[in-house]
Length: 238
Image (cartoon, rainbow, N blue to C red):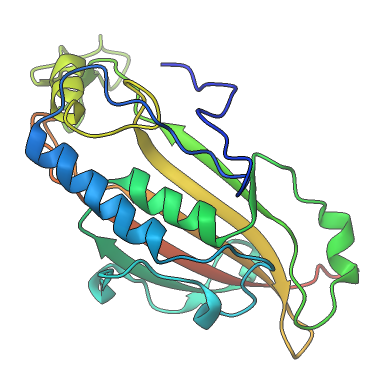
């Protein structure tokens, strides 16, 4: 399913998109009512953001988010030798209410290219604008074999024995309120930069990932994984 080029519904008061339509299939009453209550609880408790967070303590967390230290790698190097730290949380809710929470709390713009040339002018305590990107669930059958379709030594590809069916995935997600009918968020990523009090440049990435779909796509349990990544960006050698 192609990603839409427009926002669903735009609020003139907040500048944030609020979808008003329900899922195309008839949602399960319990799940839909629960999702509405969860979204109202999140949105009702927030205040609009201004400057992007400059420290991890300034990054808001949804009420009820549970830390998942077993999913966090040890602090250390990342690509290019930059120092990285990661915090992982789980929230027992669909991704859409959590996305709305962060759209209200962070002054983010969708798919805006960050001007990396201007980062050198950031002063300690200052931050860049925030850009966010959305990826939506697609609906194509997939091979669920561990090496499905793979071939070795020039042999013909192996026939797939176990498939994940798009119709099962759509049915499992059908009781969940999407951004638009049939449009469910699989992943949302917020990215920005800041400069700390010591003058070091920090890259921040906040990712929301839908983690509630079973491996066989036949069942869905409301669950969102929230990952906060902080990377100390080392200057390139001249």
